[in-house]
Structures are given as structure tokens and as C-alpha cells.
Length: 111
Image (spheres, helix red, strand yellow):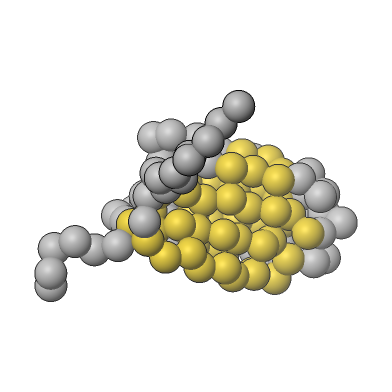
């Protein structure tokens, strides 16, 4: 029996939710964030989504150059260590959206 339990969150910060429409051309899904602690994507589309962890020099995703493929209706949660750079995506058909949830740590710097 558990009594007097106290929940301690692993992170404090802010959640953001966004949706990006499917496109047959590479596009930015989420910008870089050094405060990113968790990221999940849900492909709410009838098409496959190809996502790519990107750099400022090489920032496009393609059907042949990608990090993760999300089939229609797939859910993806980024594993640790969390990638904090840009993430781009491209679909194999223009149908639906990707739903994105990101947890960012609060800036403790005081700036």
C-alpha cells in the first residue's frame, strides 16, 4: 500500500502544441531549441511522413534522406538524448497534418 506519495516532475517548463500541414516538399516542422526536453509527433495523415534531424547547412528532408519514417497514424517520441536542432519533414502525399508536442525547460538564466 502506498501512502502519502508525492509526485515530483522530472522537468518543469512549458508545453507547446502545433500542427503542420502535409506537403510534398520539405518544410520545417519545428525550429531548434536548446531548452527542448521532450518531443512527440503524431502523423495524422493518410500518407507517410519522413522526418529528418537537420543542421543549418543541410536542412532538407526527402523520401530518400530521412531520420525516421512515420507511416499513416504513427506516433513517435524522441529518445534521450534529445536532439535540439531543427526538424524538417516531407510526406509522400499531401494529406493531413503532423501534430507536434514539445516540452521545453524554463530558462533559469534570469535573462
